[in-house]
Image (cartoon, rainbow, N blue to C red):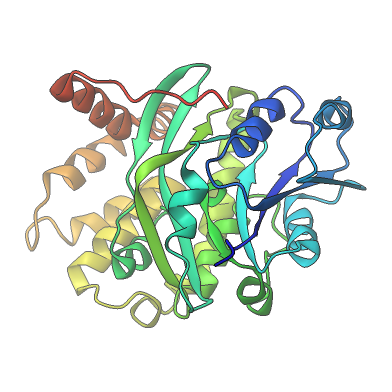
Amino acid sequence: MNKLEISVLITTYNCGEYITQSIKSILNQTYKDFELLIIDDGSTDNTEKIISGFYDERIRYIKLPHAGRSKALNYGLKVAKSGWVALMDADDISHSVRLERQVEHIVKGNNFIISTWSAYFVKNKILYTVETPQFGPEVKRKLALHSYICNSSVLFNKNFILASGGYNENLERFEDYELWLRIKDKAEFVVIPGYFQFVRVRKDSSSNFNKIETRKIIYGIQETYYRDFHSNFLNYSKFEELAVRGWREFFYGDKIKARSQWEKLFFAKPSIKIFLAYLLTFLPTFYLNSVRELRFKLRLKYILKKIMTLNELPLQNG
């Protein structure tokens, strides 16, 4: 039986500093049956020169005028040779067995979104990890607050995504989160346990202005679904909805509104975690924003895991 050939899709814009590692990590995969489709969204750096230095017949490079990531993704899906597409960010690194593990989970249903756990790093240091729930309904449930799916780790059927409207080309960021929310009721989410995707944390794109805009974008994406919360997010109790609405305001909205939601819970369903976050909302906005960006919980969890196991997660080098 012939192996299934898939398309690995990288969209890139001025990522010449990192893209070599990204490409090498795909070319060195244990699963060999793929095309590596690189859609260059009008880069003005040395990206094209770097890619021309790779001599591998599996690489297909297309350069477009700069139009934004969502448009580049949709274009890549349309021209990909295979029906099954694995996404890859130009500054991330895939574990050498990532594709092999994912292809094992392809089934007859074309509505499967197959992703993996991910580790976030700066330079050669892992900062924290994200273990997405493996149970599909729990993934959908958690979408109410965050995108727990690492977009650069997904493998999906391109025709299913395109038939669902593809990526929202009006969004410059978080187009993946908007997509998962839009298709959550007809998609099946499969999460492979294991750190098969390494996501680079880049400080050069994290100005305070961008952080403020980031929160606005996510809040706006969620708005449609929060208008009819019970229809869009099943199996939430009244108290759980209040908690989630509070967390939404805490992370992306108004700290005073977060307090208002949580105050309704304190006597009915007390929570130490919510109470501590409630206290943080009394900090000046500047300091609260700094706390929100630290990913303190995830970093502490990873540190404790290293201490308990006396073992550090090795970073793949492409």
